[in-house]
Length: 216
Image (cartoon, rainbow, N blue to C red; front, side, top):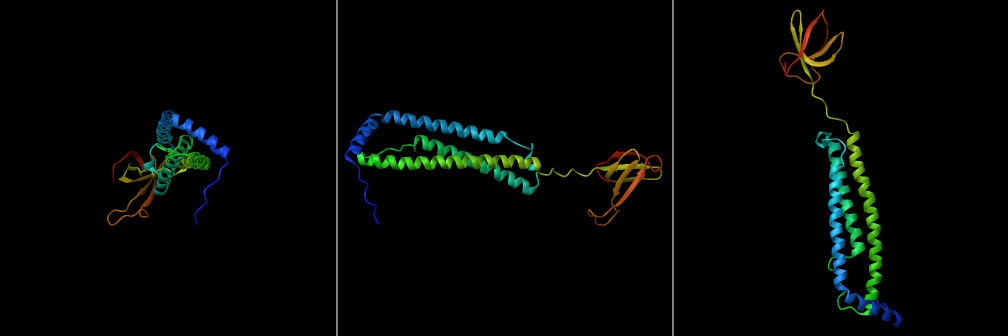
């Protein structure tokens, strides 16, 4: 079903024609204003990109556990995209679309365009606000997640302990003024994390010295 054309009062059409004549005479100024608005948009977009890349939590995100790493990347990327969308919507609402002109204009067409433009601007501004809030929240969540994510597991330290009778090599579990505690792997056969014997060597009585070792 075709929507019937809108009907306007003669006074409205006359005022619209006057505005249309003024707009036609100012096409160069309008074009330059739009160019300046889109130039500012590119500046804002570049600044947003730099800000997101500079903000960080942990120095190296690659060290995070798999689930945390994917979540951080997804949140920061989503935040950047949302902020770019917000900037685009804001500049589009303020300056219109590039090359947007009213072709074959007359007074009634100008009034129709103005009404549609008011609705479009209100919609773009609302979208820009929502995208900005969501973008900031997503980026902040990604940064905060790097602060609370567990750190990488430190590699086990292997030490070689010299006793009065032998040399014992194993994974260092604890060391203090009383002695040194090692996890000694069984000799030969397949080894697993559960295998191994826990030995506590007391200084002077059992252990004479201890030194780091690359491997046993």
